[in-house]
Structures are given as structure tokens and as C-alpha cells.
Image 1 (cartoon, one colour):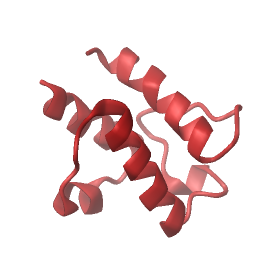
Image 2 (tube, one colour):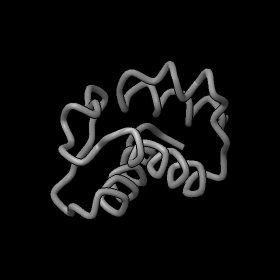
Image 3 (tube, one colour):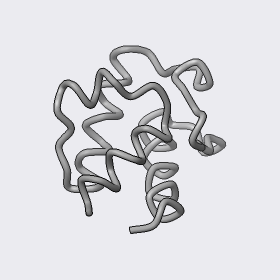
Image 4 (cartoon, one colour):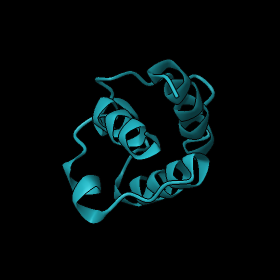
Length: 80
């Protein structure tokens, strides 16, 4: 799966989780960029991403993700 394909799926997940069709994420997107992205929504987001891609993040990966680009890197690594 290419980065572009991962971003397409992630955009759909983010729009669904945050109920905002205007969201478009990129490598540099962080929780500071999305108004409703708090710790509770982060858990919902991680669960939704895991379901969408059929993967499981470990706690170290979840804690280390500083932006969406790092999430994409982990997703691609897990799918590879």
C-alpha cells in the first residue's frame, strides 16, 4: 500500500471519528491541528485506524507517534 493510499484511508477515518468532512491530514498533522482531538478521541482514533487497516499498535508505538506522518510510517511497516 502506498503512502497516498494510506492517507486516503486515514482521511476517511479522521473525518468519521471527528465528524468533520473538512479534515485533511498530512505528514505534519498533530492533535493541535484538530479542535476535538483530545485524549479520549485519540483512543477512538487509534481503535478506528486499527480496524480500518487490520493492524494493532503496541503501547510504545502509540506513545511515540508525534504526528500523522509517524502513524503512516508505522501502518506501512505493519502492512509490509
